[in-house]
Length: 100
Image 1: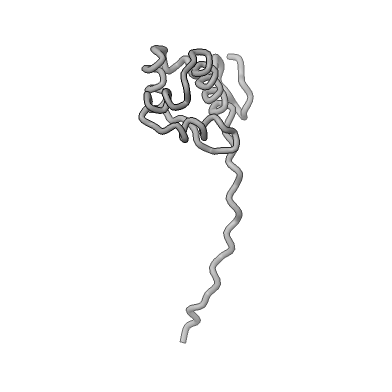
Image 2: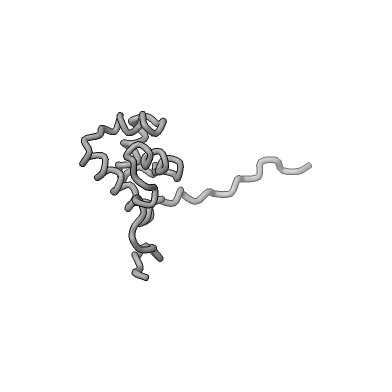
């Protein structure tokens, strides 16, 4: 008779996922642009088909939520800018911006 009570392997605690420098740049750019243009989180959320809680979570460093490329495209359309405007001027390697 086989033992069916084999213990499950112990799972490692979830790794703390912190936003990358690229993600932080984009989040910061969008928030600054939103505030500068007197756009509420709710207005931006409606423009990109999300809810205000999502925008709040993205802008709160305690949450892991972030914009994806479709969000960035929708935000660019809303503000009438290019999606490339959300990116840093220089690439980032190992969380350090590198001038090329």
